[in-house]
Amino acid sequence: MKKLANVLYVTIPEAYLSLDGENIVIKKEEAVSMRLPLHNLENIVCFNYLGVSPALMGACAERSVGLCFLTPNGRFLARVNGKVQGNVLLRKKQYDVSEKNLESVPIAASFLLGKIANCRKVIERALRDHALLVDVQALRQTSAALKGILAVIPGCQTINDLMAFEGSAAKIYFSVFDQLILQQRDDFHFEERSRRPPLDNMNSLLSFLYTLLTNEVASALETVGLDPYVGFLHQDRPGRPSLALDLMEELRPVFADRLALSLVNRKQVTGKGFTQKESGGILMDDDTRKAVLTAWQERKKEEIAHPFLNERIPFGLIPHVQAMLLARFLRGDLDAYPPFFWP
Image 1 (cartoon, rainbow, N blue to C red):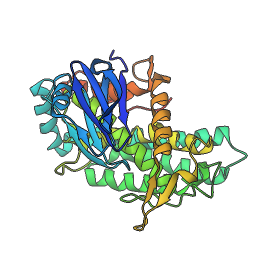
Image 2 (cartoon, rainbow, N blue to C red):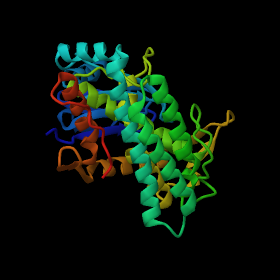
Image 3 (tube, rainbow, N blue to C red):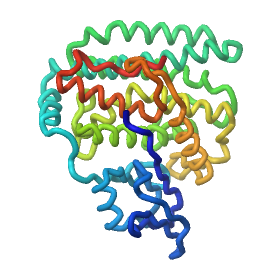
């Protein structure tokens, strides 16, 4: 089993990263602010403007350390990749299946089954734990509606049909998302999902967490030898990690939505950490971003019983396990891809 390694998040805009022997050196205004061994890291996520030295980029590529660049506000910019990993036959199989509707639809359906089931679990947990604080009837109706969509997903024959049901399920789920916000309701009031740009504080928090999850999933897919840019549910577009977006669908409710709700309900983030731009978009300040990243890393260390492996693993390894299971299915070792269902 793969071990859960460290992720370095560089949040200081004026920081510059370079390589000194086997160590990463982080400089701020020409002075060294941190030095740490490269071999202890699995990923480096940079929110800084100045960037990274070519030598460090090369070392990361050679050692399969993920290197991702985001804007200080969390918008994806680029990933640095080294040699393609894995068996070329696996990638050829992936490309072949992605072009065949009959073979790609069942995989895409599995992603959506996992997503919608996990959305239901988020709602059911709220009903179980906070029945006195939520609109029980509205949440039960939403759960029942999502259950109905789950029943028809396996019968879909095309990707367009699946995407239509995915859109309906998302609209139903997010229509009651505000009910799950138990604290700071004025600062984190949620009406609908908005992005590019996010138009309220909760959407800003969700978008940031979704970006982090996309990077984690893309790294996991590359590790097992799959191409994160060729998917089965999301259409291929230049620069779009379609397979990463596919696989993260089933993980969004568990990794991002639940964490966003916990951060708000526990008051680990507050409305003061968000500001509105002239364009209407909402930005997260440095302290809030650091608090979110800390909670993200702590969440990844928690253990969970994986329903397919029947063993306990750190939360942060779930993307790697699911990527491995997808690769095993494409190789013919499994009869179907088993999505992650939150136990």
